[in-house]
Image (cartoon, rainbow, N blue to C red):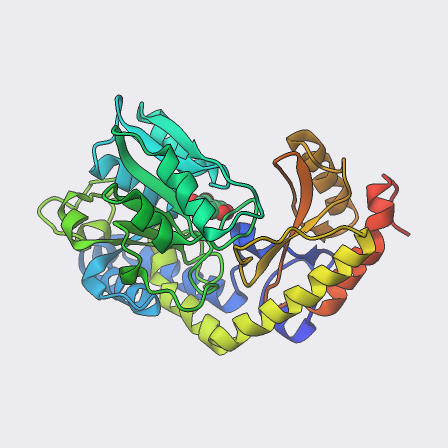
Length: 379
Ligand SMILES: Cc1ncc(COP(=O)(O)O)c(C=O)c1O
């Protein structure tokens, strides 16, 4: 790890952290800002909830929108992408008799939430080495005349691909599209959400934009805004989108109060230059691991995310959910935080690159892997 940068975080130095994408890592200064926000609320909860938090939360929401290049009136704060999916399903009134389309690369959240509301799931299937036209065609083929929503992941969780969202939206029009952009804020340059031709876009700020957990942004196209309501409707009565999402009753608002602090750390760490440095590091790091394994990395027509990338494991390794879980435990016991992924009958490691990583992290993983895969503890 880069010690100078790692000191800004509170990660366990005994572990090699190569999975920033999963839950992010809150910088120490941001955790302290959140602690201060919480302490301030405790000085006079009545005054905080009534008189102070409305302005604090409106400011946090505006800052999140500006960070994403979006107008303040277009974007609400929610706690995470899972909540955003729930808001959209509720706002569209999706239920029994409706179809929702997801993909075989999609995160579980949307599918489970749609099924919980009684909708039928349809899955767009495409391989890890598909090209953009094939991806768009797979989504279009899954749409029926009962489809009320298509969910497309901008950066896929199991496979770390940047899906061609605009092409998918064009291919399934006029069905509204929700972009699950959980990994995009602060990690995917050139976001132009309003130009994607989608109805909804939700991204976590607590993964790659260094805010406290749980902070996420939900952008909604103008025609759908009035239908979108928070899942906790406590004090939102009479308010419009996005203000009605600000104060969601008696919950802990301290994460949102420290959103600006997280976004400032993102800029201080180098902003998009830091992302470019991490992307370059990941290319080299993944090559260390790949050459130690002697495998071919999957590559088709869809790019990998800048800071997330798959490396194929040898045939027969971690190619089921159970064996991937067992390997995760062995890797962790050996000091490496890196997720094995079973996808389409093949096992992969999903590597990440964060500001605190350096090439040595990947080199050490590469050196330890042969023994870990053989089931022995590394020397
Ligand atoms: C693509 C994708 N969507 C949604 C989520 C869920 O995010 P959250 O737990 O913050 O709702 C994740 C989590 O990693 C993800 O990778």
